Length: 308
Ligand code: CP
Ligand code: NVA
Image (cartoon, rainbow, N blue to C red; front, side, top):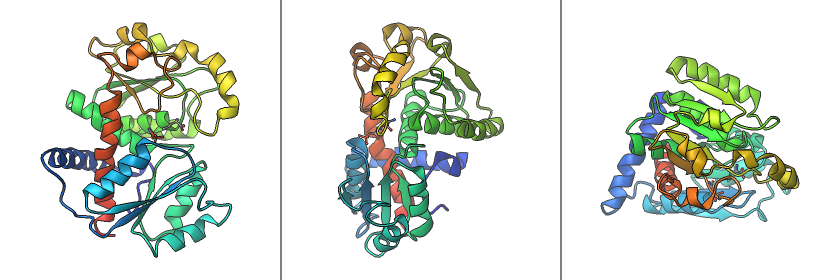
């Protein structure tokens, strides 16, 4: 039993599958009339150092659907690590609420929150990873193909936090993961080494390309994300110069498997990393994918906060 949800690699394949099965069950239950109020009286504090639409609203609604509540703490409040130390924030909040979700710049800050708080801590995106996104992505792929094992997932673009968590969940669940990214925009080597080790155990194949056309051959899923993540705004001009060959357009989608699906964590920068016609076309699953954040995270808060 885990106290926190900080990174995909902390969970076993069986535990991730349990979360996915629970998400499927809670989604069905919700669509058929509503969830049981198992989190009645429980409150999740949501700390945001960066903006958000999906993470903020889907966690808030997940808590409400389960009978609990959520508290939004904006980037202007708290001052995590500046107005007050991370350790002190953790030890104050644990006296008020039953769980913490944090969206931060430095990954170390979610680790420190989890270290100091006796209550569950959930990583709602850091510069290093986005595990809640990956769980919702796995749910979307699972719903589409009925399995994850052996599915070919290709990520095209920046080797960022979203790519890392997608690689990790692919490796854990036995899906094959390939990435095409420009030179200097590789995923961190340490994360790749850990994923390779996990892939050896699950039978997942990891492949690394510069050429997006090579990478999408046999793809069941083509995934992309922004070229410039939050906090990298100073690099935007350089990135816009480097990344256009990695734009997901109709041609690239046609080079994958015939029924390949297109995914994006959103927010999308339309006609940068993916074209309008792809985002709104028949292969796109971007909105069901966004909606699955609600169901995947409901499984996370259900599991972590039920006994908190
Ligand atoms: N995908 C995602 O995390 O979206 P937000 O930044 O809007 O939360
Ligand atoms: N890679 C993006 C994801 C946003 C949800 C970022 O970190 O800004």
